[in-house]
Image 1 (cartoon, one colour):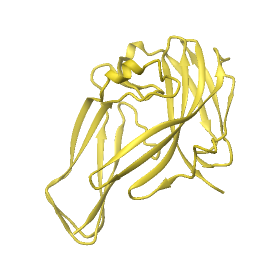
Image 2 (cartoon, helix red, strand yellow):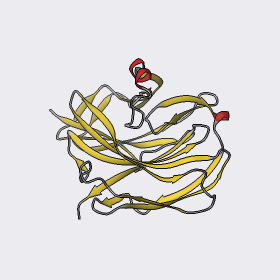
Image 3 (tube, helix red, strand yellow):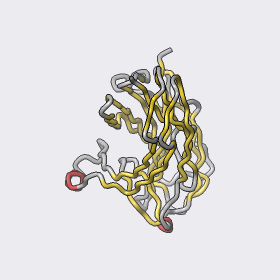
Length: 245
């Protein structure tokens, strides 16, 4: 007897912030009824350092001494022991995302997750949009960004294109994210309330149409990165779907 299980989040971009509720469904597909001992979801926070091409040589010694560290573990029981009928069954779940005290997880564009105090975060207001996240690979990625305010002067604004490869089988899945392009769209403390155009041509040798199979996926993401003069990094991640017209 075989059955497939998939976890689907309600939010398409899969980006959640503190205080929100992570919601979705556990989808089970089987030809016959399946007896189970209960279904439990576990959420983990992991510190894992990944170097970009810009930082190789600068952080090599630090990188070699860092191992993944588990920060957060949270469990939720979705279904108690019982039986799932044949066919397709979707079981809803909700995960409240709380923080401990005034500590939050902050992601840098090098992929480093570190615990920092909320009081150390500078205040800023930055707006913007991408014209599309479903993109034709031969056409540029476009949009605009506007810095409304920032307590700290801006040093640089960059676009980072990332290729995400997922490969696995019944024993588990491996996910590898690789920076394939980084371009600067602004330098220095830009004028506030002035639209900054976003324009990125997809590199021909390192991109392809988004591919998704049962055991293998090639996906793409773009990070908008604001580097401040006090070395804080502000990032926003956008999953992309590439296709060939």
